[in-house]
Length: 104
Image (cartoon, rainbow, N blue to C red):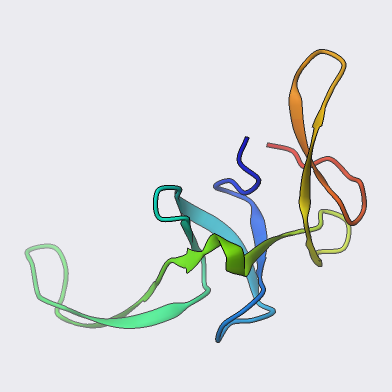
């Protein structure tokens, strides 16, 4: 079971955006990276095509998963993620900081 998933709110632990938080837009499990909305923005030069204009655009760059931590559902601070097995055999993620279950 993955500890971080698409749609989770995460906090950046290291790098130029340390302390900022955002939602995971895309996971890249083979590269152990994730795209986080509004975090790790880079400028890219874009060539003109039929449906896009030329110019310099801002877009998110991938961040390594070791530099991300899940935001606690209670207070929004960084927390580690644990996995519980319920009585019916289902695995559930929970925040180790508050003990609260993470939906999704």
